[in-house]
Image 1 (tube, rainbow, N blue to C red):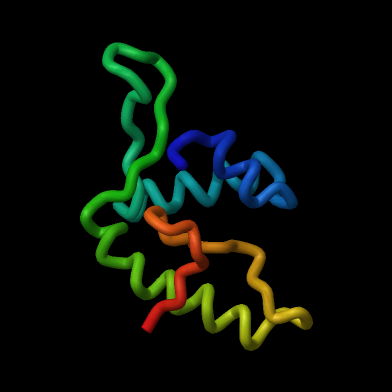
Image 2: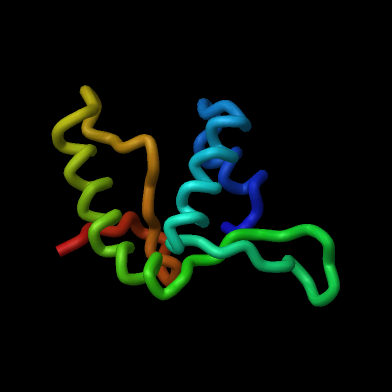
Length: 92
């Protein structure tokens, strides 16, 4: 997931302006960086920086914690799936 539209589909209940602001904050903090989608392309996407990769375990635990504490059905609004097998990530 690298494009604005990808993020918008994932968190469909967030207004585009709000999503743009949040992506800007993550970019300003060095968690994400904007990169061209293709060589010489004008359109850009978002990639995790080394700082973003370092933060991922914390993010995964926050998602798991929120499933237990903040939803009536025990399901988070965001799901992290293991790329290889497709199963939900269960941080340990």
